[in-house]
Length: 148
Image (cartoon, rainbow, N blue to C red; front, side, top):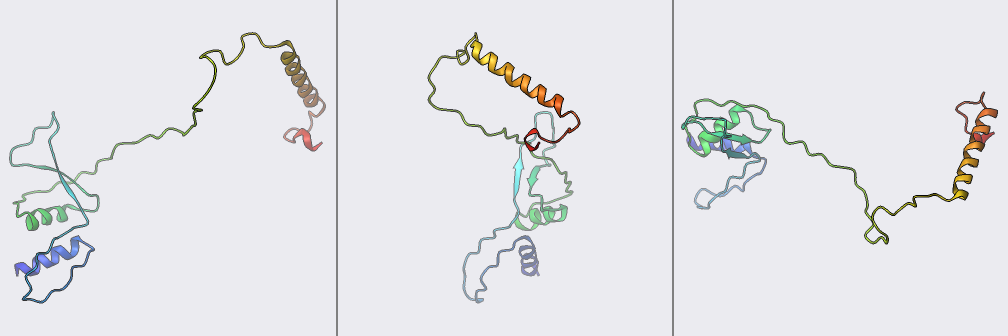
């Protein structure tokens, strides 16, 4: 009877199939379940009695699976199982960017303090030209100027 129960537990907790061996062959079998359990140390503000243990289990397991796992595999007495779903840590990945490895110059002296007069004149001319174009085509909002 006990052998049948162990076979039922093993068959429901794993997707791996073990080889069928003849009755007379003595060979050690290793049970590798698909789920996992980890014993946790109680937090500093959490006081558990000596007869209670805290586990972290895989999300696929339910309360019956945990109870049967502890009873059948580790032969531990289980009075009650309470499950609580906890959210894992949120990992925030920042946007990737590249940094040039070799740059000549000093920190803070990338842009000159006084811009050239020719650059200012060209910038002012381009702004004036854009304003004139916008005034002449005020009735064509939303249509780019290159299409006219």
